[in-house]
Amino acid sequence: MLAKRTAPAEVSPVVHEGVSYRAGYVHDERGGRGTLEAVEVASGKPLWTVTVYEVHYQNGLETDVQDVYIRTLAIQDGCVVVTTERDVSYCVNPKTRRVTGLAAQGGERMQSYQAIRRSVEDAVEPLWRKVQPAVGTPPIGGPPRPPSVFWMPRASLVPMPHAWPPLPGSPLLDVDVFAAGRGSGLADAEHQSGAFARAVVNATTGEILRVEALAPALKEVGIQGVRPAPLNFWDGVDAGVEGLRAAVASGTMPAAAVAEAIRKGYGGFFGLNDVWKQQLLALHPEFMAWLSAS
Image (cartoon, rainbow, N blue to C red; front, side, top):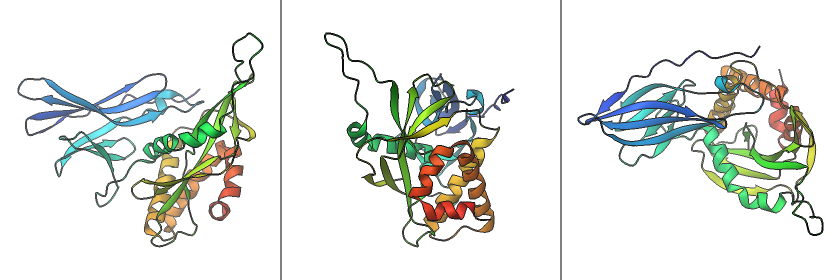
């Protein structure tokens, strides 16, 4: 039996300069959105609602355990600080409604990695159009024949260091992009391609610095099974990702506790994604060797 999560705790609204800010969460079959609503205290009139973050459901895992709710709201330096159950915080500027991430320490602005992934998938769209498999040749007088496998680009769920060991003054991460395909009678699995593109991003801010083509055409490399992940699986992966980002941003090898979190998070991820692991072994041999070292 798959685990079910408990109902989220109620979040108390915060009031600042006559406006009440309230947490919300909405979801459908594709994913969820953490929202912040502004309401005028004197009249009770809703002023605006903004999406703070998004959750994209992964196949093979119960959707309720993937939902990430808002845990607290606070006012800090003119910002409405929204903190999730995973201890990821965002600053919502009430004047511009702009949303930025907050680093765990020091208040430095930082995008969440999931936001970076979505930006990367948008940025590689021109390269995707070049390698995307074409629709099958139509029969004479008939409509186009659809391909047997429908492919979609997918940025890696875990970033990799651009260099390992980390280099001082070079806080760069690689986000490799492959494609996943559904069809051909597969139920609990998907086709997987090799990486066709890569985005190099700033580990601290999440800014995309450049996009690189890795392959002139899409090549299938295997079939990856899709199965439910253990409870709290993504918490461990997220901890590993944030530990790697911190190490790369600092330009130093991670301390023992952080190194353990990185190895645990990435090891758990690759345990459920062996096909992608084999691709990254070739693309990032130094870091992958470090992960497997005791």
